[in-house]
Structure formats: C-alpha cells, structure tokens
Image 1 (tube, helix red, strand yellow):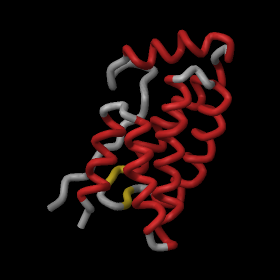
Image 2: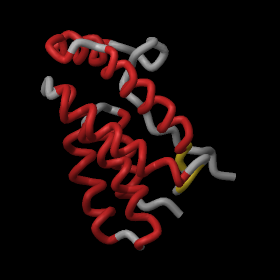
Image 3: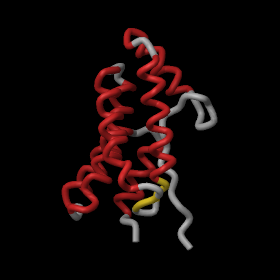
Image 4: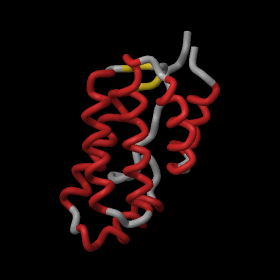
Length: 133
C-alpha cells in the first residue's frame, strides 16, 4: 500500500515542484526501512538535481543525477508501485544531455527543459505510477 505522502511526493515531482518534493520525500526517507532507504534517497537526489538545474547549477545537477541513478538501479523494474526503469531511463537521458551540453549555457538548457513536454527529446524525468490490480 502506497502512503499518501509518497503519492504527494510523486505528484510534486511530476508537477516540477522539486523543492516541495524533496521536503515531502525526505520525511519518508528518514523513517524508511533500511531496505528502502536507497530507493527514496535515489528519488530525492533526482529531484534535487532537477531543482539545481532550474537554479542554473549545472555541476550540482550532474552530480546528483549520477548519484540518484546509481541508487535507483537496484530497484528495477519497479518498486513501491512506480516504474523505476522508466525513471532511470529518463534520468540517464537527462544526465547524458547535461554532460554533452556546455555548462556555461546551463540557463538555456534549463529554459528548454522548463518549456518541454514529456514528448520532447529532452525533458525532466517523470515518475510513472504502475496500475494497481
């Protein structure tokens, strides 16, 4: 059973409210069972990476995306009712895009991402909730 707080964190993440998502998920991470801590920490790191990017912090975004991806790998293909594989693929694609971009043009990259849709070649990752049967 997925907690209301986790559902709220997913919604905040998908609405690109990355700072609010961090606050919501951090409370869950602190109380999580040891086996789930890396999962929540990975999502938190992806959210904070996106937050850094919106504040034109290229280095912080790249470092935290890499850390988040590393932590989430062990939870594929899904965990806690979310499609971890998709979150990982989208996070890795964003990381690759950032690594190939000029750090001095981070404001332009951030603006492009802010204006992008989920169908754009470069976009912020989304958390896809699995359909519960």
